[in-house]
Length: 429
Image (cartoon, rainbow, N blue to C red; front, side, top):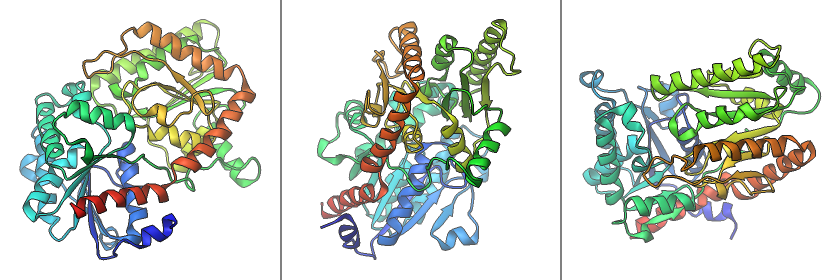
């Protein structure tokens, strides 16, 4: 039986309520991308309702089963963790009538947990990250980090099923919450919309538009470039990349698609490192005003980001915590080799030596993911980038292999079927 036949066997009357912090047009990270794609592939085979933060959606969105919730007025000036729980209570009330409630990230986990209890339906969690492995969030939430950790733990221990986005994530879940029954924790990789992540044509109007985009952003498409895409947060490891970039030849551009800082402190750290890198390059005679360090803070539309990726030579992911890393899949789909930390679920995406290079990293076992020897990690990261940059033909071959791997292992049809399998098992139990 093929995947399409199996999908069609799911009763159309099955109602699935997806609960999420992010949903278009308000997407800030990989979890929001995941829920958008998952809802699209499930919708032909089930009655899907999406419940998200960021306020009420318009009539057109509601007609498609997308509903938004605002923070209650009485909670707008309180700790963000408490404001989150205020939204969760409204969501929990509204999942009445669902057959499955499926929550994504701690922001929506308590909505799924309480909604499941209230209405007597199974709650499934997709684990995109874990609070015990992000202790730096205390910088952002203060005492709210204890609240978010409690909410996540309570929801996980009460869930009927948990979906880990990688085998590495599954191991982290069972290590963080050893009380869980391992049989309840399933691996379903993140997917990618291959039709949306495509390298622009080499000639014609599409190629001209792509070149105009990158030049407008300050990127010279005739020069080599290293591209980073990610939020400015501890887990993405951007400060390590900025230190490693000191070893790059000065004619290699560093393109940072980086915004949405977690705290003013990490934003200040990144700004300082960028300015220091630019100063070093200017001191060595670099003529460009930005010294070949292009920092794009706004979130680019997908077509523009595809143009930036296609103009790059190598994509870099210096994360110290990454359950899977959708950004790596996006870069691979556009045909870029990936240099990435060998941590979390990344080794399940990047085929070392075939689609990119995995950078060894020994990490402190205290939940922070901090490298045991930061200078060694920075040196290894720099060496890996130089290795790929130094062999353009090998880099191109890796890019072709990356697109092929994305097509063969991370297409959404198969991922939808695996998700529905989890639903079936939970309902049967």
